[in-house]
Length: 203
Image (cartoon, rainbow, N blue to C red; front, side):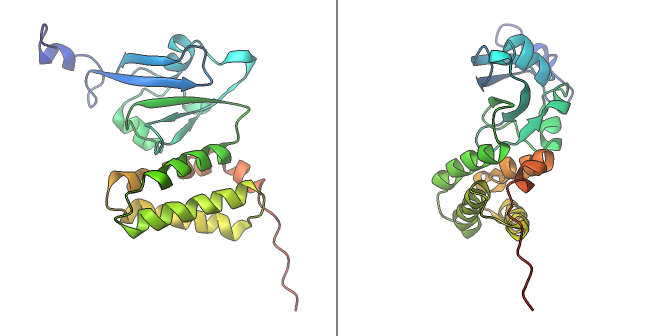
């Protein structure tokens, strides 16, 4: 940028997201590490050209972008150009530039629980929605994973996501529900398959 100037750098990328972005590419991909790509590069290029694809002949399932409070983006959006707006539309964020590739062997409910555990531990505790809300969300996810949850627990989880997102004071709490909301949006069947049937009320 010093050598060529700001207009040169702004000529790279998309209209609303200029320049390049550094990502930490990790997870179930052949080549992990730090990569720098022009804004607007597709997820497919990042995973399959730069990352070399999925090891052991497994299928791509999703990519989690933006760090622990980012969302999970499924296969049908691999050709979406990576910029701030497109990631937001898909329920994720640019965040700290993390990109974790997930293959077909992973449970998306487990993935959501893993990232929620991080958000619980990182909450500073200043505001109740984040301090209490993330902990309760994590407890509900654990209940679902153990197949001890019912449909009402899933509804409560969604309600908590909305509350924490809208009422937390800082970016951690506001984005903490992203892993849950995005996996519910694209992989809801995985949640529902773990729910126990509610017993009918005895009259």
